[in-house]
Image 1: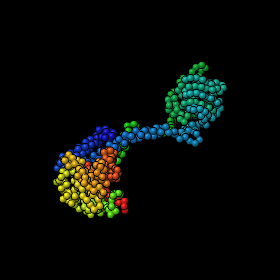
Image 2: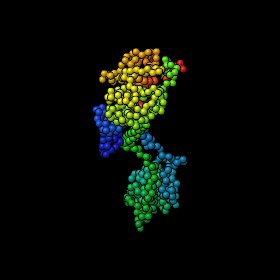
Image 3: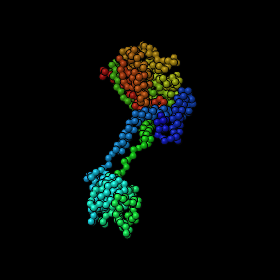
Image 4: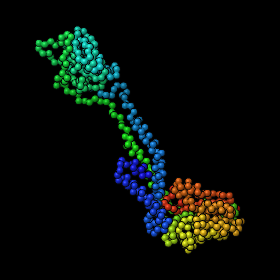
Length: 552
């Protein structure tokens, strides 16, 4: 749990991880301390100090663990979804204009030089007007410079002069001064002088400027250059090279200071959005899952605790009994179990229970065990409101297993003093039915276990018998003794989901009304809570059983 909630949600060691260790270790220390203090009879003030944080941590840690386990299922699904979304963003195509032309703007020099056509991918055709010149066609990959009339075919740096127009093919950068059409793949540049290019002088006074696919004219070194006129030859020199000789290499830089490079950078498609880096994505998923688990756990425990502290709600159930006389039709029995007064639930909670019971105006009150978690010395004041219980035929009490952890004999005397009538393996005959009660199974360790024969052996079986027995498992003895209705508690309805799954396997009936042969069993979820003052999926209740006669 620490790993998923604290280590995986942080980038490295630090305060958060150390705080996580303190919270988890300290929480479990408080839980163990609360349990030990309650069972060992530690000073009551110490039990009160440890009980609230210790028992609440017990409930919170259970739901945190369930949340972490659920997160193990969600985690890979969430990571896979994020990865798929990132890949979709990487492969998304750039939108193209409706007319199919490239979205990259052309430099001004190319648009001024003349029409540009692209017969093939990566190739550019340039035409420029000139006066008194012959058309030269240049096709190549790289750079070519030609003037008319001339024919030049070379790889590298070649110069030629011819009386007729001819194609020129070269590897280099293409430069033309004349009406020329140049088709090239790569970067095509038109300049008067270039390094490693084929050059010839022309009579034209106008130079053509050509630009490769969507890029500015560049020199062989990759910098942009503008087209300028050839410098005039020196006096007394022949501007044409001797036949069969190669021209001297041209300077590598443009001598004309009037042609500054184009400062406009080449435009292109924007970079696609980058996906989250794997560690960042993993950290995001861990934080999301841990946050969701923590929020769910805190919300669940908070709401469940509020439901207990608020007090139990009234539940009404009608139970038809075949032998019940017509005069007893509608007889109301208020059933309350598992109040669990202790270091967490005290006198204020007992007062809420008493007020709720009295508000139902029952004919009889049945307290079916687990009244307290502590001694009479510590909890006598908390149980004092029970003296206010009011019913037409009185209030009755049977022991539960927790009374034997807290001094059953003392508590039997105390409830008698408060006005309740204990039924210790005993029976009383009321006007329309018999009411019996047996001790809890836990009393066997003290020689005070249930005795069905003593409570039910000599009764008139023609009369209806209602039995108070804390644990539902006692139903089998009740069936054997011809009991019509057994009222029980003990299970808490599971109290904390999914505890109901375990409690359901340990008890014949988890909660509610059930039938076993001719005997009916009703199990209350209880009014309070043991351990954590929290209920999830098993709300507390006080049940009003209304007996129904089939003769009515």
